[in-house]
Image 1: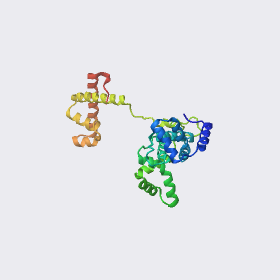
Image 2: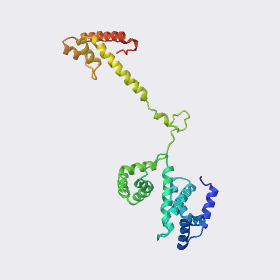
Image 3: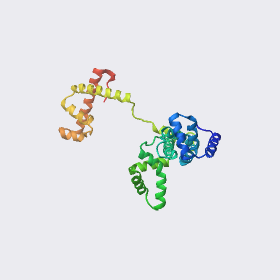
Image 4: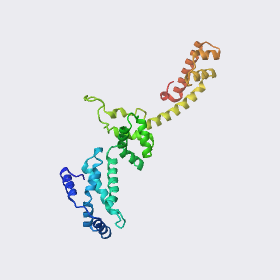
Length: 288
């Protein structure tokens, strides 16, 4: 549960007043917690490092998330560090805990900064948290350089592709927009953004139905073609059943008849097909 503003202030005040630990004290507390599960030792060890949590959380304020929540996530990382810390190693607890605190806060930022989930690989995380800083530094030291050149330098520094840098920069430059937000401002009758996401293509069941009906109609038409003579079939296929319909002039020249005669034969063939379809399949048969 997120801390309230008052409790957050009290927490910060208490953290700043907590005494620093000497190396020997720190090691003794860590050994008590690790070896004896001494809760009091854990509390004293973590309480003395709360100011470290606050300092690290402050570095992530520009992502627009509540400071209290950042601190709370940092505390989770601090407790994780206490659970994994090996006091026999020659390392200060603060040095070890810094990584866990920062990792916990970074994970929280990635989960909550946007409703669109970002990359979770180590390189994508590095890009997310370092892009703005690197871009600002390059723009400051290299005036007049193009965005593409900046992207290439950042990509080389972090170890990602230029397209990844450009995509992340676009994400960081924009903000999430509700699908219920109106397209036009100040107009109560304006359409919502989601209205433009409607897919007008047929539904899956409609497509299946059309495929089944199409196969059935094709079989019926093939049967009805038996009622036509070879010249009628040739004209009908060339005029109605071909992707590129032949003209009356072209068919007339090929058959040695006038284009008017071709038109008459085509009309008669269509009537014969309709009669055959209605006779064999009733009104359900689709007309040409």
